[in-house]
Amino acid sequence: MNDTLAAQPSASGWYVDERCTNCDVARQLAPDLIHEVDGRSELLRQPRDAAEERRVRAAAFACHTRSIRPATGRLDDQWDPYPLPVDGTDEADATVLFCGHNSTRTAGANSYLLRRPSGNLMMVDTPRWSETLAARYERIGTVTDVLLTHRDHAAHGRRYADRFAARLWIHEGDLDAAPDADRVLRATDSVEVGDGVLAHPLPGHTAGSVLYVADERYCFSGDSFYWSRATGDIEVAESITWYSIEELAASLARTAERLRFEWLLPGHGDRKHLPAAEMADRMRALTARTATLRPRPVDFTAIRW
Image (cartoon, rainbow, N blue to C red):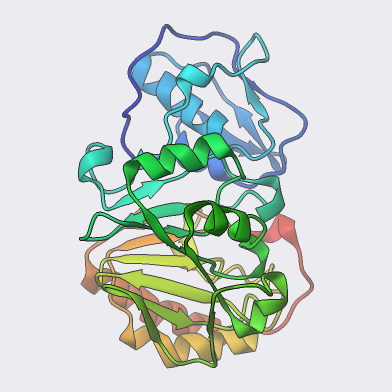
């Protein structure tokens, strides 16, 4: 993620309040400043320069509970850096933009804007609903599609799709979470949903989980798998699998060898950029590890962020 927000005078006394749900997004954005302590995020020290200040502010405007606060207790909208380029130096040359403004109604999930060669955009999952945010995204380009990865991230899909006059996509396995979707993915067949964008149904985390791969470079994995800073590898959220870990193993066995990507962009968990060949090797290893897993009770505290 790039530091694109112009430097502002340093704020003092940043803190994380008691509403923190340990969703990890703040630690993704400011890993040198914010750590997990006793099952929640805590600021280890105050930012020392403009770059660190920008990272804390980015974390504050992504936090779904708005738990990261300056000493005044109020965030200044002029500090809002979103959307942030993921793979470029600025908004104009990035193919993927991180939306920030994660929503309490999607358990704090990350969402993204994907720019297509036409200049149009696709939104993958959604940030919190805001007319201000919708207008901001629309100034970047026309949003033609809202791609939902699964039911947990569906809360604002219809509203953003209607605002943009865009198509809303979901898999039939999770259709009850977005029953008025415009496009419904079926079974386990991979489908092209846009120029260079393939949807790969991946039942496991939920019955209707889907990942989207664009240009054989960008993999939007929803909650099917993510990059773990703790293990330094791609992992499945085995302790938070709502549908079936065995189905997820079968999905990976069926799909992983056909996936080619360099950027792993999950809904929860960290992002990662690696050469495509290394990602492919790690996906093979993940497939093998997942095949050994067995059902276990849901346990949010066991996630290896």
